[in-house]
Image (cartoon, rainbow, N blue to C red; front, side):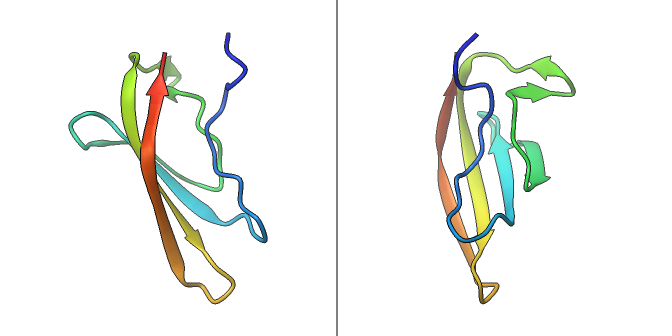
Length: 74
């Protein structure tokens, strides 16, 4: 078991965010607000591979900022 059991953003000055994880075909496999992803879908571990993510954060003026990237599961 790795040290990184959960994936979630570290946000300074707030904690309201939406996080989406996408599979290799662009399908949303995780879409939650203000929570941590444990690398599972319906309590089943996902296959090893590279997954895209987008995290939308609202600033103090409710302006959305969207951060995207890749996460590798192995």
